Length: 201
Image (cartoon, rainbow, N blue to C red; front, side):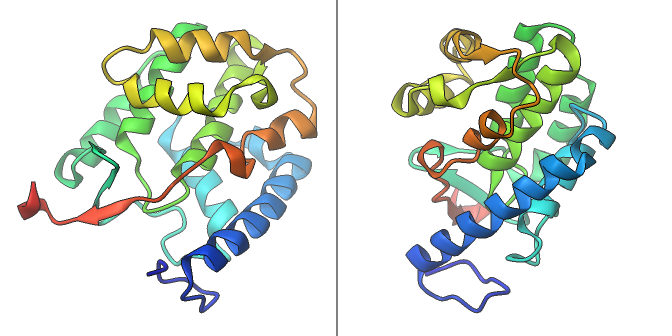
């Protein structure tokens, strides 16, 4: 079943296509308008604004913290009861070096604050931090999809892999729309989350 949406689409593959098309259009607007540069990089508030902008034409929950527990495969993201505390702690994490920024990114991935669209929103959020703090962004065309997904799965236990992969893909071409858009390219995400009840834990 497709997630409830403003488009009235009930077929999951059709919804995924519409979601990709609309979110990419909105991402271009976000980049070209300069709005991204007005939000404080590295805060949950800025991530929430990014998510809302990308998905507000599709979902009522755009920019809203999820109200269900979610999992992908065997990995369960931060339980709902701890989510707000986790986000508050992530806001306080340092972000002055590459390693600190990736550690913050890993923690936000574990939190997965939204019902859908976490990967795309958080990659834009990551690039905003990198751009502000070290004058670089990730060139996602240099990131192998399978290596990235496996490294992100393992990152809560061992983040050295994801640091290595992202560091190798850094570029100082921070004003390139093409480089920016690669971060939300369809080939870099699979966001098929399963919702479950707390009593199922």
